[in-house]
Length: 193
Image (cartoon, rainbow, N blue to C red; front, side, top):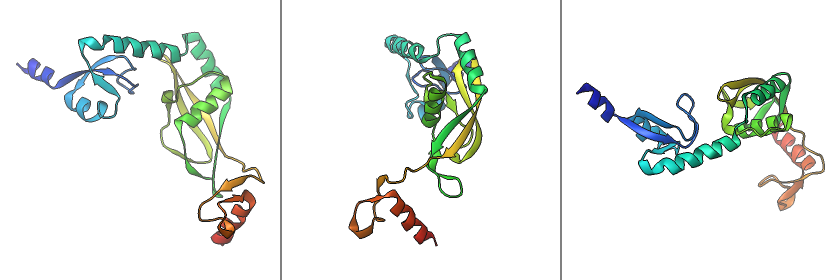
């Protein structure tokens, strides 16, 4: 009787996105009913399992294979090349090195892609804490189910090209909606003093 009650509290799902510690897209998993009902399904990470969903599982697996790095050797070669150098991400920052926003997994994936000329899915990037300042950080990449890489990430302030015209609401002089960037910096420094 205890076994059947335990099975009643479990839900069988098909993962549509990767869930750390649970599985990859296309995997059929059995989880607690509340975890499925309150977390996985509402966030679109999984759908309910049914016999007719096998075609959906096959489509998800096929798409995953197309995105993955083909072999274990390729993943190890990419890991070695990434760990031998720092990946640089440029972001808009203020005077104290504090970023306007945060560095996203998509930003990191694009920087890694430019560094090694290999497409990296942003969902494979794991950031421990949000990156909201310039400096050096360590980020984990899952390149293959058996290979992960801890890369050195260097976040630097992006340079604003002088002479560039930007749109700034409420700061422009004389009611203009666009101003040269030098004027913006002059206006901002006057307001800060």
